[in-house]
Length: 176
Image (spheres, rainbow, N blue to C red):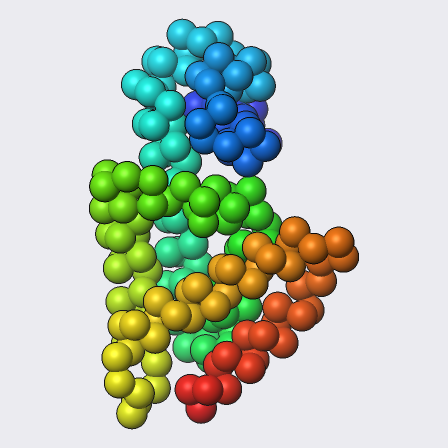
């Protein structure tokens, strides 16, 4: 396996720093220190802390989009799609917390997040069986009904992924 490059190290450290301290209390210095790279290397790859956040957001959401498209292309059922989302959020719990807490910070982020959600949820909306009305809103509701309970359960004393799979079954049954 190849050695991670400094950009990847910075993104990994930034996610950890943002998750532990929050966006506002995280500094470029702390990201550089955590990633074991020089501060100049951080600025070589990213113009600002916000640019780091954006790159992190784009890399993680791209993976979620790939998982979603693959699931739909494989003709998975709605419960299976929701379980794929649960698996992603379970593995990327720091990102999930960051996404839910920081995604709507300002108009620029709101635009970025809106574009991502539109790209992610348009194919999901088309996948929701008829005769449901407002499929686009339902797709957003599905996303929220997986993301928020996953974060809640991850933060509980004894997190169990199986309870999330049960929730996915109950939610998807509403569309049967």
